[in-house]
Image (tube, rainbow, N blue to C red; front, top):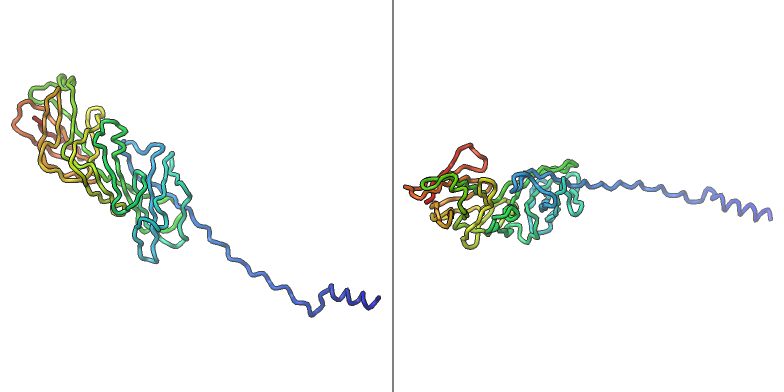
Amino acid sequence: MLLISAAFQAGCSGGQDSPEPSPTTPTTPTEKKMEIRISPSMTRATDYGFESGDCIGLYVVNYSGSTPGSLSDSGNNVDNMRFTYDGTWIPDNTITWTDSQTHADFYLYYPYANVKNVAAHPFSVKADQSTEAAYKASDLMAGKTLDVAPSEDAISIPVSHAMSRITITLEAGNGFTAESLAKADVTVKINGVKCDASLNIASGAVTASGNPASVVPFHDNNEYKALIVPQTVEEGNLITVTADGRDFNLRKAFTFESTRSYKFTVTLSKTSAGVNVNINPWIEDGEDNGGTAE
């Protein structure tokens, strides 16, 4: 019994010949990916900023070392993530940087859509923009910020209007008084403009397409305004003002460019020697431009 007890105790103690437990290999903590946050800098067609429920689309394209990537329809670091405005921009899903080193390019557009071709995304302005809702729905914008290093800070993305804007103010000329013009039944049209377009999201370039049509502008206080696809319009009746059943036409060839607003002060005259209209860019230069329609 004494021999058995001694042997049992020796077995439980491990003895000098028992293997030592192997040390645990420390694990390297996994790098926590940083969330991507954006802060677009833009204005809406309303001229007062975005409204709750507005949506934008975002693409993020990674660099390979110091070489920028190309925006593709899919397979980017972020593919057309929808952000909804509710005081701040909230993504449908959390998006992150690939790591803490990889730079990226950011491409943003408005309004959000199911984009199938980033090089030629179709868009149309409304031919009838006589309501504020239709006018707003004709606004298209795009912007980008390139070579951004990973950061926890929100990425500022300047976004520009892709369309042109035209504003028309009517004045009384020969045969009218201010009072008679104010009481007249007036409609306004911008003629010979194409309403369809395609947007290259990477470059922001817009190409007009489709057949020419007439656009009815939104009557806002004392002016009529509409968003126009950038294009060159051949000489013709660019603007038609109908007052109490009579048409007054302003003949002109004109080129509309992205990001620019063109102001027309149109004088209605029942007898006139001609038309002279100047324009000024969206960044207003303080000049009053005008002409006569007869």
